[in-house]
Amino acid sequence: QVQLVESGGGLVQAGGSLRLSCAASGRTSSSYAMAWFRRALGKEREFVASISGNGIIIDYADSAKGRFTISRDNAKQTVYLQMNSLKFEDTAVYYCATRRSPAGSREIRQYDYWGLGTQVTVSA
Image 1 (cartoon, rainbow, N blue to C red):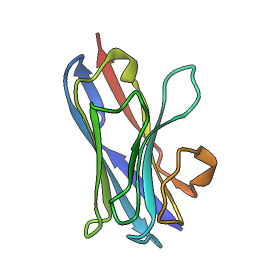
Image 2 (spheres, helix red, strand yellow):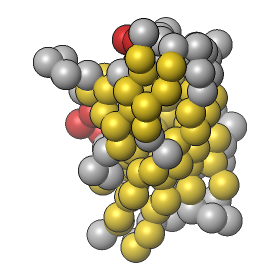
Image 3 (tube, rainbow, N blue to C red):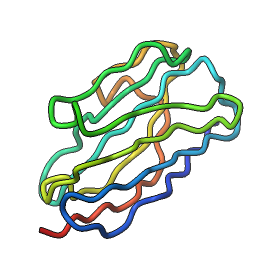
Image 4 (cartoon, helix red, strand yellow):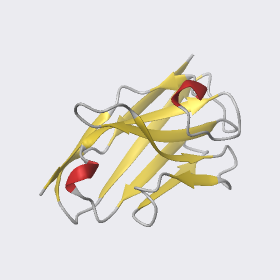
C-alpha cells in the first residue's frame, strides 16, 4: 500500500499563491508518476497536472498552464504544486494521486492511490 498526505491548502485572496505538498510513504517508488487533481463543489474531479517518475515529462490542464508548476523531490518522496495568480475558480479540494507506472495520465481511473485532499479557497 501507498499512503499520500497532502498539505499546504488554505484561504488566499485572488492573485495570491499557495504551495501544496504531497508526501508519499509505504510501498511507493520514485519511478511512479504522480499527479494533482481537484474537485470543486458540485463538480466532478478534474485533472490539474502530472509529472513522470523521472520528473521530465510534465502535463498541465489548460486551466493550470502558466500559473501552476508541478515538481517532485524523489529523495523526499514528495510532489509539489506551486500555484500562482490564483483565481476564485481555483477553489476546490486538491488531491494527490500516484500510479504504478512512470508515465503520467490525465485519467482518474489510471491512478492507484489517492490522498484525502486539501482544501484551497480563493476569495474574490
